[in-house]
Length: 133
Image 1 (cartoon, rainbow, N blue to C red):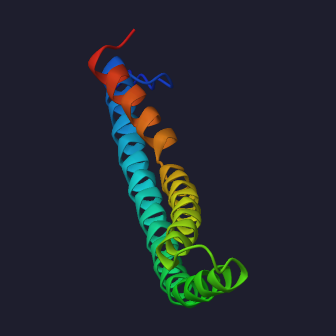
Image 2: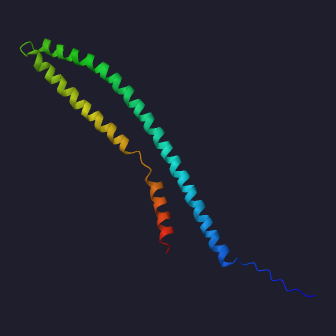
Image 3: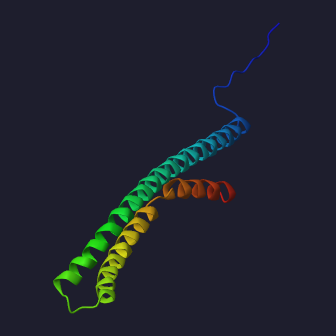
């Protein structure tokens, strides 16, 4: 009784396609996990930057208020002919300009927090799935 068993070492088309689909699904899962991890890291970085920024602003504010009063009265003492309100105006303008510079610097620091690479890679993979070449 002769039975002719063929053992093919090449995978069938169905198994190849299902393997590709399985690999693609695994790739999407891994990229979503990477995206989630990067968002968590960026959120942690933002929290740390915010806490430092708030603490720094509180200390600067308290010290700045005291120094501003000192500067106003020092200016009034140095130039006795100048009214006190002009001294407050000069010192207040300098402090406002300094505050604007610090705010601009902090805003630029917040703008550096991104997850662009993960988003682009995910978009490319989703585009490949919807429009295979």
